[in-house]
Structures are given as C-alpha cells and as structure tokens.
Length: 383
Image (cartoon, rainbow, N blue to C red; front, side):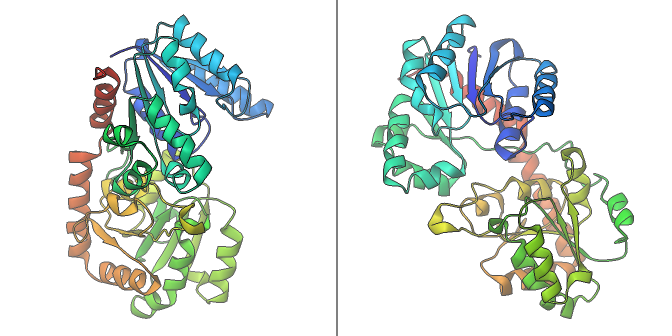
C-alpha cells in the first residue's frame, strides 16, 4: 500500500458515523504506512486530554491541528503538504470530500501521486446548491477518485462533476463489525434489565433528530398496540429531539409503551440492537433534500444482529435493505405500522429475514472487504 495521509475533520474520539467509518478503515490498513492529519474538534481541557489519550493508543501516527475545524485555508494546506513531504506519503485520502478536497491540487504539487476523496450525505446536499456545486466540481477535477455510498448519493453528486470526474467515481461504503453485532450480542440481558423480557420489542437505535423518524414510530404505536397490545417501542440514543418525542408519546397516550434509554456507549449498542424483535427507523428527507440519509448503517448493524428491518425511504437508506428479504422500506406512518405488526405477528418471518440479513452482511458489508477496496483505490495507477 502506498504510504497515505488521511486529512479529515471526522475522526474519533469525536463521535459520529463518519468518524467510525474512517477509523474502522484506518485500523485495517498498514499502520506503518498511514498518517492521520485531523482537527482537535474540542476546546475543552477534558476533551483535549481524551483526544491525546486516544491518539497515543492508535497503531498509526495521528497529528492534530490546534483548530477545532480544518478548512482548506493556506495555513492548513501548507501543514498538510508539509506532513505529506515529511512522512513520505504518496497517497492522500480526504475523509470527507467537501470542503477539504479543495486542497487536492496543492497536495498534488507537494508530491501526492494518488488522491481519493470520500463523499457522504452532505455532499449530496452540496450538489443542489449553486455555489457548493461549483466547489464539488473543483474537487472532482483535482482528485483521482470521488467515492460514493450508494446509487442515490452517486446520482446526486455525479451531476455536479465533470463527465470525466463522474466516470472515475467508485463506491466505498461503511461496513459492519460482524464480530460485535451478532445474534448473541447480549440483548436478553438488556431486555431483562429494562423489564421487557416477555414483551414484543420494536427497537430504534439512532440520534434523536427529526430526520430519523422516531416521531413516525410513536405515531404508529396506537395502531401497533391495537394489534399487539403488549408491544413496546425502545428508543435508543440521545439528542435534541427527545423532549418533543416524549411529549408526543404522552399526547398520543402511548407513553407507557415507549421507553427511552438516552445515549448509550458504543460498546453497548450491539446488545441494545439485540434487545429488539424488529428494528425500525423510518427516516425521511427534510429541507428540500438538504437533510438526507446517506446510507443508514444502523440497518446493517441490525441485520448483522439477526433482526428484520423497517427502513425509511430517505436518500440511500434503501441501499441498506434487500426489499422483502432482510426487511422493507416504508413511506408513511400507515405502512410503518403495518410492516411492524406483520413482523411481530410472525416469528418465522422474523427469523428468515434476520438470517438473510446476517448472511448478506457477511457476504457484502464486512470491514475487511471494504478495507481491501480502499487499498485498491489508493494503490491504483492514474491513467
């Protein structure tokens, strides 16, 4: 593998899906041929101390900029170019194409032979805004490969690129740790602790923000309870939407059947997935397409845990579901309720979908397979 410089704002211990994506792939690359240049992301003394401890524990070199956010300024560009030369790196991987990919020409001049820029959901939103669209076009022209999560994000982003850059796009998705997320992940203990051992459980694991659709699940609960009276909705995660969700459950008189866990450490997430009989997150696109689901790795984590999934139709979320095999994509509250009721009523269907989902993750979504794909992209010769 070419020695590679990762340039990113999205790296642990800062929490988030992109951060986990980059870190999991970085851990599977040759640590002697990897350097990470990242922002510090926090101003608090406690946060900086935690960041320093995290960096010291990594098998590869991590260099932190003092700023809380890297931008493609002359100062940051000079620092990145200096690290490239100092460490003898020949490849650059931008953890998020926008906006840091704008540094690509300068890093090429500094000696980079191969530049890969990864896109997520926010670049699909950029592609709809005239000014940001032009910046994406420049990023595509300056890099060798722009990656995409799935067909939704590919089609949106490709429209902002030159035909040549669009033709060089390649898929690179997050993966699933199938050793952490599995059917015996500890769900029974979570159910027992929460007093749910004998109840059918619909679980949703996600940040509590409007796009994720926890409100749709609460709206579906009266219908679900009319068919499955002892069902419970387990909402796992924290976020700014929690107060509104609790008020919504009370207003609909279903608060007794909706449980909130609050934020849960990553190490405990597999067990919380496993506490469910059905996983549901009916996410939706908001703000005219600017707030959209890039992929929805939680559906795949649920599949790896052996659960059938009910997914929303936002952005790339359907790419994480084999329709009718690992679960279903839903478009409204009525569909959400109907699919959940069917799954709760049919243990054999839940088992079949869960087994198919687990098999699909092992075939297609393992981190080691995706890390090999990244290595291929970084080592390819430009032609």
